[in-house]
Length: 509
Image (cartoon, rainbow, N blue to C red; front, side, top):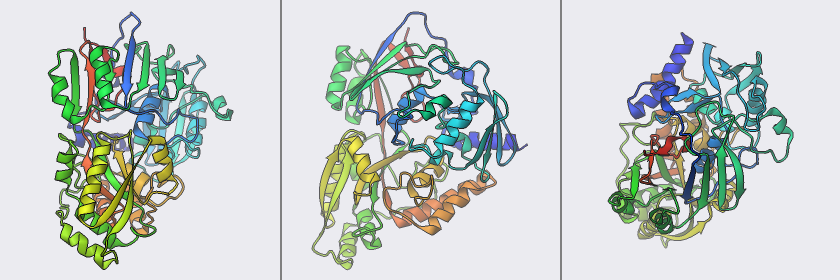
């Protein structure tokens, strides 16, 4: 009964997003053609590293690429439902115990056998090493191998999110854990063949457990300029491009050489405010900033249609969204009055940090946010940084105001809250770049994770989100639109979050 209930909760978390029943793992795959094929991808941003080489930030593109090389016990399918990966099945004899049965004959990309002791060593290391996945594995109390194919995981408390977190519990050979740096040896559909700044190559893993992907080789080249990526696609020197600006979608859709896949996505963009020091330790200054922003105007002027205004910290389809919450409308006169009451009647000078190579039309977003804040009495200087330098800056606590995003792949708000809004305690708060430490919010987040029913879980997540919105350490802006373009000779089956899985690309004929 416990097993059925836990799996039902995992499915329900994603069913809110998709309205679909749990699909079988085999139905998400297809046999590859015999002929060797090469895929050329022009992408906007580079990876921040490969798993095992610390530090590795839990950043969406970096982890997406790493997910082609490494696997966990489970994975998200294209509907963002938890599905079998290295584990062929699992059961929960009680609310704190999971028993996983590994698939027979598993091997790493170098040919060595993958067994339960490798899983145990990897998960134990993943709780403590700087791999960017600690928060996903935070509730694990113990892991042990019952035999070569059985793994037992015990959690500190009942945890609705363990299965979702185990997607990021990448498994590596236990001997590799002694190496510094580790080699990128995993069990995913691809292996890392070459890597240098601005380019990397993945090659098909001959020992992969499932059907071979359609392409034997995938060459990634980082091309930050959107116009150049588009030009390469049209000239045929790239097969796939990502982060197509929304204003270019219609033109590309009318090009007979191109297929475009576009949608609203699940990534919310925020302003992060450093709340543990001036000027944003004053709630009046934070409220003034919030009231200065006109999100609808931001969408239009930053050319983000068909994106939508973010009225909460998560999209409305994500569990934890509160349908009763109504944000205050923009009020720049009130914003100026609040700044004056806080002692900034002559204006408040702030610097807004943001990555130049991370978010769709990110430079336009930063410029428009600065313009709007200037109208309400702020004096804003925008600082554009490369992604790596940007994350280093906010992680070190050096930024008072920055543009940051979060993608709720699990279909629920708990992962956002544990990673970004919880105080930095152990594995929690790994992405808390705002200096936020609110005991009441921590307690609400912890209690939501310990819920005993889906209804209680959803209700507690909503309450935690309302508290977070009151604190305004994260101020939501927009739900980012997503768009990718392919040569007409290719067909893609996108996931609901529009993240690029190579194995879901295949020839159109």
